[in-house]
Amino acid sequence: MKILMVCLGNICRSPLAEGILQAKAAAAGLDWEIDSAGTNGYHVGEAPHRLSQKVALHNGIDISLQRARRFRAADFEEFDLIYAMAEDVVEEMKSISRQQFDGSKVDLLMNELHPGQNLDVPDPWYGTEPGYHEVYAMLAAACDKLIEKHQ
Ligand code: 4NP
Image 1 (cartoon, helix red, strand yellow):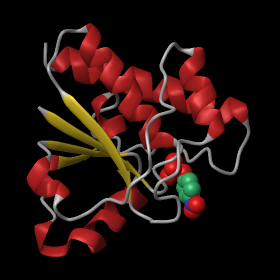
Image 2 (cartoon, rainbow, N blue to C red; image 1 turned 180 degrees about the horizontal axis):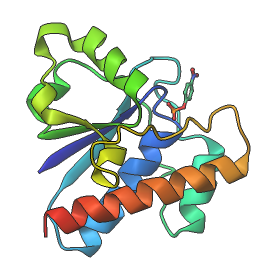
Image 3 (cartoon, protein in one colour; image 1 turned 90 degrees about the vertical axis):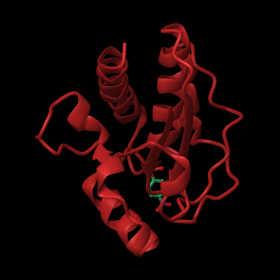
Image 4 (cartoon, rainbow, N blue to C red; image 1 turned 30 degrees about the vertical axis):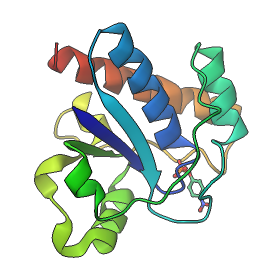
C-alpha cells in the first residue's frame, strides 16, 4: 500500500506523519510505502523544520533526510490513500488537482483517531517546541489506529 501525508509546507506536520507511519509500519511488518508533500511550494527542497526533526529524534525517529516537495495531481495515480493534516489542505489539494481529485482516496488523518469529527492537526509553524510535541502525539495516536485497522 502507498500512503501520502499532505500539509501546507511539507516541513512541519507531514514530514513527522511520514516518519512516524514509516516507523510504525516497519515495526508491524507491513510493506507500506509512505511519502509526504505540501500544497504550497515555499519550502521545496528543504529538510524538515528543526523542531520537527528534534521532536522526531526525541522519539527515536530520524527524519533529517526528507526533502520537501509540492503535492501534484499525479499523486492521485501513485497513491492508494492520501491523508491531509487539515481541512484547508484538502481545499488546496482540490485546487491543485482539479478533475483528478479523487475524494475516495482522501481523508483527514485525525479521522482515523476521531472518526467523523473532521479535526485538524494544528499548524505548529508559528509556535514553539511544545506545539511540535503536541502535534507528534496526535500524529502518533492516529498512526497507531491506522496500523491497527490494517493488521
Ligand atoms: P506545515 O507548516 O504545513 O506543517 O509544513 C507550515 C510551514 C510553512 C508554511 C506554512 C505551514 N509557510 O507558509 O511557509
